[in-house]
Length: 530
Image 1 (tube, helix red, strand yellow):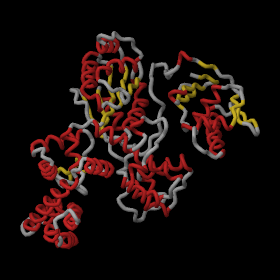
Image 2: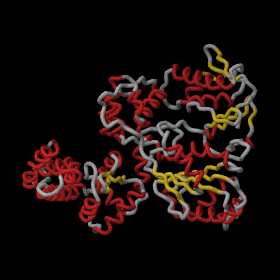
Image 3: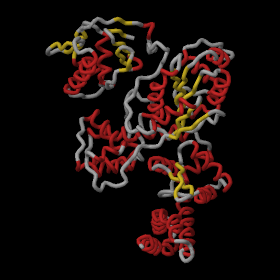
Image 4: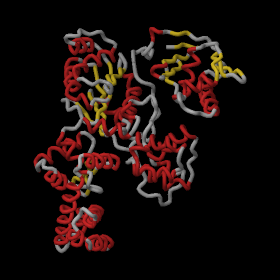
């Protein structure tokens, strides 16, 4: 840790504080600060800075100047009368303030209550979610933020923890399980996050003994791949340590006795662009995030003509913050319209996220791979087969595809429940009935896995025959069902019928099936129009 004036800087954590409070600043500016502090009082050339901050990349000198200016601005905002960085004309920059290295403080945020949290991140579009999570933390000893990969669980958990840390005598402590591969090391990871020495033969007992007299918040991040071990540890801690609260993030609940689950939704996206301009489009949190990140990283300026394309990009990406941020980072190479077209290759385009992000979150593909590898064979198979549905589907549809995949109907019911719990299938009530759907990004990923498994022809045939039977039943029910109920059941299935017809007319399809189904979309459209 480096000390200069009222500032403290932890390079490994990319954390800069001023009088104990985190300073918001970009990663590139912090990289520049790192190299300058490693050579206090010395001239650091522009070439050395560029090679350090942008290794193996061609970068215009203007980028360096912009980030140095950003760093100076952040320091001057806190200490306006002190000069920290001097320009050496024609050569580079020099850090001119007194610097004290302090190795003993590495990795610890020196707050008086012992809090050890990551830097306070900038949150976009969570004005409703954050207070709800804070309220749950203040009323419950165990809260788990659950959602699909890339939805922002860690970010909002860290912000919530910063807000409530003052309510705990011994602060808040952060444990990241993302790099932990074996369940037996869970107690050791918790002990490490707490800074506690433990008995190797029985580490969880040592952790529980330490926590018994503590009043603190323990944040357990990325729990989904170690659910059983973490659930067991959490149960023991909560039973033995009355002053300890748990805030966990996971793609599925921990299922402990005291757990309160908060399902974090995706960001809001506009469902149409009528009457939207660049100003009121920013009221949608996904658009706000896209524009903010594109502006930060590429200097992008949002304008009215870009509204339809940006809104479509956010819809295609389901408002998933990770996907939106990855897309925004490409605005230095594409305009909005071109990027929208490129999203058809979304797993190739949405790659190379921030260097300091976990590897599993540096590409959209890696994030989905992480979730997919945690599935059982039955769960993975059903997820692949469910990708054939174009939009929403019901439990009976999932059961039909489970039968098509030779899993059996009963297995399909249990498996769809587990996929919902793991945040890979979304469930929602509409007009009193439960409906399911895959996010577009998840559907695209599962479809690729279906192709790799050589199951797609089989799945498409079963889907087509099932959907045709569904609409033949719809024709029969039109004469006696209440119109509103009929529309609620069948109106959202027209795209599936069109897909079935397209399969029927394809080289591998069944033309007779397509001919039987062909008039149905027109008839259905006419009925819905009436």
